Length: 550
Image (tube, rainbow, N blue to C red; front, side, top):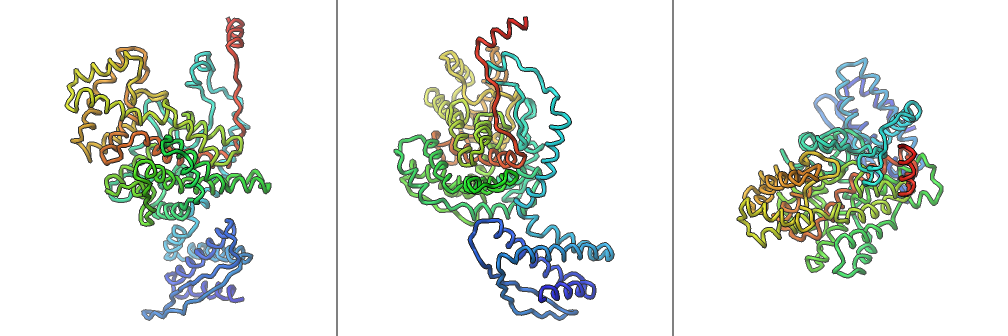
């Protein structure tokens, strides 16, 4: 009866005294309701929750403060309170139509409610319409051909073959990557940053990839806080890493740590309990956010174990995702934190066909949980033709300096490039399997360098390579894309700020790539995408097919 009377009294206050104090009451109602819903949805094992709600009421110019009310609410009452809160908000909205002066206050309330700041709630609203969209595509256009498969495609690593749904990003050969339709410069302009004119926060990109919407600063702040709340790594993970020789490659130690995290998988627990397939996305979401949150701590542990005498740095609760990662690695300069925000953002996703993204999707299609899927993706990322390339670029650039000095002339640099090519090697950092122009990820790093470190000797060398290498590769006539890619620049920036250990660079790439792979994996589950199972053939089959065709 107390709740019913409070609701009636609240509506009466709205009619008589305006919305100012009522908004405060309803907002507190909303906070209480959504906290209860979150507790009911999670596996927190809490039987009761004590809320302290402070409400202010006043008449005219005089204000008096009600005593703090301590309300103990059992979980089983959560639904009743939630729906009463929603009902109250609905009534206030209807009154806003009758009283135009109240409409702006109600709109403010809608923006400020917890669900608007809660990524899970945003996804829950989006998923049904995307499911219908997929269903319509299948039913109305399922037989439409997307192109012809040639022998070259089969023998050439499936290059140019369209055969995979990947919602979070799309790679255009000329434009480069677009994250949910936004180019990198647009992301830099529109996504919230840690400071004015700063680099975009990775949390903002995560929100964008999952929802397709540019988040507000408050939404990014809320997501950043949620990730920090999930970031504590179980001790057994560190023990698993410590069981490896300190000489093991950083990627080996990192992937082992991710596998050790799998013990906490909510998806595995839910699947074993018989969760309905329509709900698969929810424990996948939980696993994915926890994995993303914990990766910087695991990655920084590997770094400091190998290179910093096993002396570790705890997380700083005042910092964002990228800033905290830099801090735990041991780099606290504002510029290095900005670089890490940029690095994590631009390396997060690059369509679904690259080795790490495709591997994560493929393993995930077997209903392997996000930890298993991402660990598999990391093992693909560790290959020299994929994520290990950023390590190779810096090592190659340093070999140029060792042999020719920092003040190398253009002619000397040309000779060294030809020497590399004639020895049967490639010039690392140039060319791309899809792109046919300079990688936009390279260009934004170049702009960062021109702004923050224009006189760095290695940056000057990278700039010379930008002028020297493409014409030589074009002269060879065997390269479709002679332009620099993302790897051609990242190592030089990291080296400038003191992260000089090139063998570790792929781990940074791995932390970044989790944002894209996990975002798509959540959508894989939400859309019910099936087990991936392409057809393979033998050379004999191809030979016979060619004969029949001719």
